[in-house]
Length: 196
Length: 206
Image (cartoon, rainbow over all chains, first blue to last red):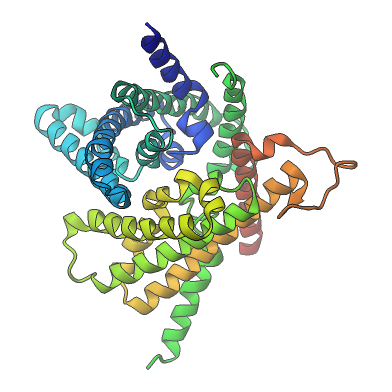
């Protein structure tokens, strides 16, 4: 029972409190680029969730079963980025073969995910937080993806309305998006301290 | 060897990285580290140094092997090259400046997926010779460092009243805005700075 509670708490904490976008600044680039329309944002969020869960799980396994056992920690970053690039490539091929319509709707996002810092960032954080339980690593990876999806969808919703607003000329586009993100981050700070 | 047009081209490339194509303010690249490491000036400078080193090395390597690259494997080769140099930078920091390595945490390895470096490898180094690539890397790297430092100075000054642990605004006259060193402050400061840069460039054009 305790482990289940710990897992649920871990999930909530990575979705709300340690949200990758608002507290760790990861995945800002797609966040600024894609969050213009809510359906695209949702698609991107789903793709990221899928890849981050897979990459988090795989890199955790490789890190603990291969690198740490044989003292190859030096090659960690090279291995991680290879795993992520490979995972993205596999997902892309699989989708193209079996779900062509889904593949069409993801379009350019899939290859872009390789260089999404949220993915590599999460893999590194799993290592940094010294998560030594496999199930916990999987749950945290999935939670990180959900957190990203939530953040990008909230932002897209706001930006759709922002287009109707009268924004000062020099603040149009990225600046006002960043300021909005700042206010959102401020709101999300309210969740801090909810879970110790 | 280098005649006059070459020199002009090189200095143009250098200047572009510093201002007109500043990676942070104009191209909006490498936002994650820009926001994450700018709570204080010292980590910001360290980060700038790391980025210059990695950008320089990866640009040289990519430009030397630009004729061997296969189009579909290009990005993978770029990332692997970058990952190697980032590992070097990370180990160097751990060995010689451990407290900075601690402060920067995962953001040093995250240079691997920093869009600035991949963008320069793709846009400049894979098309030009080593000389232009080196100048471009230094210009872009300095431009990044400059942007990060400006952001860090604003945030540290308003957030703690100090810069480099030297008190500039004393507690008696100034209450530090704690929010500036928090994530929210980073987003808002960068947003306002971008707005300012837009305003300045617009005036310039007129």
